[in-house]
Structure formats: structure tokens, C-alpha cells
Length: 463
Ligand code: ADP
Ligand code: ASP
Ligand code: MG
Image 1 (tube, rainbow, N blue to C red):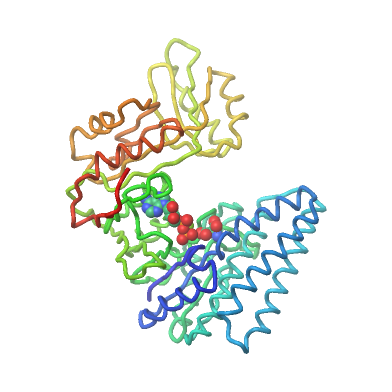
Image 2: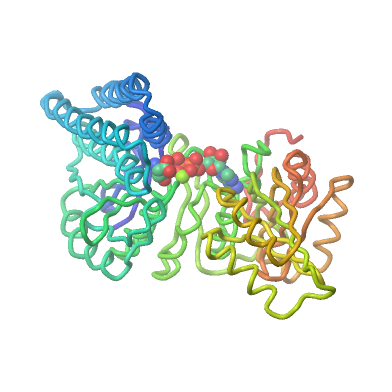
């Protein structure tokens, strides 16, 4: 068995779904289990509907729900067998009616809880998985829909739920292999449910995570993440277009890149894959002939020091100064307790004799955090910062990497540096306005020469 996950752009239209059916059809003998995201930007649209509801803008949310229904109906009809069209219409009606009731309820309450966010955002994957199942039948495959909420059991941390792995694996092993004997199994990513049957989600971008949970649960031979790029590239294409494809990397490198912003992979994806040692592939659903990126347990010998550069934007830097002459013992503990209490993860930390600098990417509770910290320290914050993170197993073995990095950066003001905590990354903070030229300079420095065993050169001209 293999798991094949298709992201939002890969199922955004009838034409895209037809491409997916062809890709899956060619691999039918490997008994694929297909995990799909919501179609196109559906999750964002559902969240916008919820936002309009709590603002009490009835005309607006009704219009948006109609648009979303039209979109699903328009894209689904051409890929659904004629004799299933009535069933399709009925199912769309049922789902959108239910959604409308839910949204009306929110409008009355005027309050959006994490639990209702999950209830609403789950419709994207529930609809896409159902539509893709019908489409596979239309294109001649036997296909069975499995509601992920029956098998992905999670805790109650709505919008960021964590799976109960043993129970989820047990349910997957009980259900999926039997279904996959004679059919392609289709499941929605991102969604799960609590013990009490309440719908949860695994966090934005969580369909990748679903794919690897399913892969681990059924001991798949491979987990394929099909998306809209050729694989993991040497730089985030939204910041620096024209990066080179990384043919192969280790789980550790992929995890680090994902955590520091390489959106192509949800950061939790590698966890189940590592546990069961299942290779993860990143592939392009528009160019299925490209070999993509293969992520494996073993370190891959590479002539380049750096495999890829990840970036995280919209970071805040928090500088905390001890009001005493030196840091008293217990100072760090007090600081981290505050971030812990406000459930705000810290990404990078640097300390000196009297001060601590750290970065966070969730700014929602920043004001409250600062107010607490000010009770025992002086605090200043800087928003609009970005973390740049160079990742490669060779960083730990290669002297002079920092010199090359800061040499290449010329006039860019570097705010904070971290190396050594994780041996395979070197990360630092710059102002967001400097991000593009920072990444371009580093890309020029570290990827002018490429080890052909590890990289496929992108022949497009670089800035
Ligand atoms: P999907 O909807 O298929 O899950 P995502 O939008 O979540 O796709 O992830 C794919 C996107 O990740 C790419 O379009 C690209 O903009 C972004 N990305 C960020 N960093 C990288 C990188 N290093 N390599 C490839 N893509 C990256
Ligand atoms: N549809 C969800 C999102 O947009 C999950 C995913 O696409 O991975 O975040
Ligand atoms: Mg994604």
C-alpha cells in the first residue's frame, strides 16, 4: 500500500481532479490510499464565512455560502458519473444546509470558539473527499470513501488537535487495508474527532500530517505528498523564484525546514514517518514525470554544505533585560513560564549576561505577555521580523559556514543568531524588508555549485 496526498491546488478544479485520477490510476497496483485537502482555497473561504457570521453580516455570509456551493457543484459535475449526479446534488445540499444552520447559530451567538471553527473548516475536506471518490469511479476505478473522523482520534485541542496515535493506528489497521484490497480508499486530510465524536482539525496545512499518520497506521511502503511544486526546493519560491530541486534529504533536514517555514511540508509530517521508517516523497501533480524529493531516514552524502533555505515571516523579536545587574538564577524559568502560560511557542532564543532575546510567530497574546514580563524585567519588542534558516547535515562538520553567511550578507543588519542547538541548522533574524535580498545573497553563495547527486539544477536565470 502507498499513501498519496493531494493538496488544495491539486484538487482545485475538475481538470485538476482529472489529473489526480490519472496519477492514481497509474499506481493502482500499489493499492493507493488517497488523502485529499479541501478544494483550492476552500478552508480560507469557510473561515471567512465564519468571520462574516460573527460580525452579523447575514447578506455577506449567505452570498459566500452560495458561491462556495456553486464552486463545488461546478467543478464536481464534469467529473461525476451521470448516474451519480442526483446523489451529488443531494449531498451538496445536505452539507451546505447543515453548514448554513451552523453559521446562522454562530451569528446568533456572535462568538467563534475553536470548536466551532473546526466544525466549519471541516466541510472543505468532507466535500473534497466525497467528490474525489465519485470522480475516481467516473474515471473507471473502484473507490471507497472513508470518513477520516471515524479513524483519526484526537485530543480536544480544537484547531490544533493532536492525534491519539495508538488508538488511531489501531483503527486505521482495522479498517483501511481491508477496504484497500479491492478499491482505492479516499479520505479527507486535516480532520479528526474526539472520543465523544466531536469534529477536530490538526491545524492549518494538516493534511500532510494526516497522510503520514495514515501511512504509519497501515505500514505503507511510501507516503507521497503531491503538490504544486517539483519538490523541496533550495529556497521558498514565494521569496526567491528559481530554486533548485533537492532530490533527496534526511527526515531531520525536512523536519527542520518544515518547522522554519517551508510550507510544502507540515512540520509534524515526518514524525509518524520516522517512527515507522517510511520514505516520504514530495511530487508535483502538474508535472508527475518529475522525480520530486525523496525524504529518507539516512543522512545523504552531499557535496554542498546547505540543502535548502527556509524562512518564517511575521515574527516578533522580544528583548528582555534583567533589571538587576546580572541575571539572577530563576530568571529564565520565569520568562519561559510566561510564554508557557499564554501557550505561545518560542522559536529562537539567545542569552547574554543580562538579557534574553527570543522570537515568536504567534503574536495574538503578545501584549499580555509583555505586560507580565514587565513585572520583573524591561521589555521591548520588534515586529515585522523574519527568521532565515539554513539547513543541511553538513553544517555541523564544516568550519567557516557562519563566516560565509555573514560575508554574503553585506549591509543587512542581522538581529539575532542561533547555531548549535540543532546541529544541522544555522538561523538568524533580519527585518522582513531585508528578507528577499538576504535569501538571494545566501542562495548565490551556497548554491552556485551543485552536487549533481543531490540537486537538479533549475536552468532558469537567477537574480
Ligand atoms: P498544498 O496545498 O499542496 O499542501 P502548500 O501551499 O501547502 O501546498 O505547499 C506548497 C507551497 O510551499 C509551494 O507552492 C511553495 O510556495 C511553498 N514552499 C515554501 N518553501 C518551499 C520550498 N523550500 N520548496 C518548495 N516549496 C516551498
Ligand atoms: N485544508 C486545510 C488548510 O487549508 C488543510 C490542508 O490543506 O492541508 O489548512
Ligand atoms: Mg500544505
